[in-house]
Amino acid sequence: MPHDGQAAPVWVRKTVAIGSCPNSYITAESEGLVEDFLVRRRLGGMNFGELSARQVEGFLILEQAMAAESRGIQRRDARPGGYPGQ
Image (cartoon, rainbow, N blue to C red; front, side, top):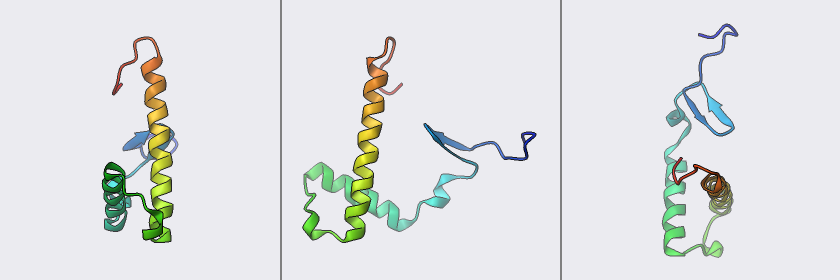
């Protein structure tokens, strides 16, 4: 354990780090929401009038996260020596 008494992070992604397994933060409902989002996105079925307010909010958050991730990948690929998946 580090000198400051904090446990070492077990999961880190860009600006987020947690000291415990992230699986404990993922509920069955949130996993279902992500799967529904990905299917609807792939099939082009984002008819917001058919969705609950919770789904719309979740889908907008997921869309923003995917766009930010995509921008990060594009920036890395544009750097000298950058390649997809780096």
